Image 1 (cartoon, rainbow, N blue to C red):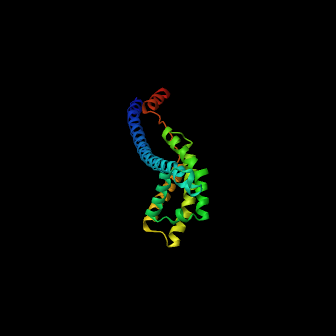
Image 2: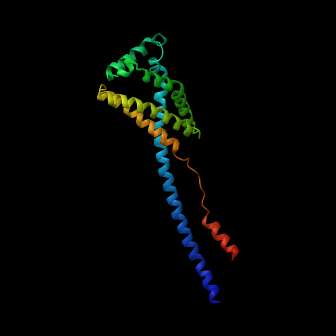
Length: 202
């Protein structure tokens, strides 16, 4: 008789402890998901901005480095010249062979990836992580060559270095976004379900 009373009393206590433990686990899980969601949103915004700039600048401005100037409207040619004079971008003015090669890579590889990123991020497509990683690696490789030149040549102004530096940071963010795992929805068993199962076994 005493054992029956003891077991019936300990069952609610055990259930209460289990319920509290599950609540704590669920709160920690939600907190982790919230932090990852905030980081993911920040990276999405940065990569979206980077992709938008590249998607516009590549066909209108950067491609002038490789293609004849008569293919572009006069205002765009003047804008490119104004930029080169303002920042002292000797790479744009002198067009060294390695820089021209990087622009060709940008046109045929980076630009389509950035256009895909725009669509994929806005529409929430899972494959946008892959295109983001590919675009980030491509941009980081190009920026490594460009930064090595502008920092090592001694010819670049502080303004030019400050103009190129954010693109390197954007490339790193794109790589991180591509490497982060996708958030997975996990369901925890409800306390009431667990209690009902124990009661049925009893």
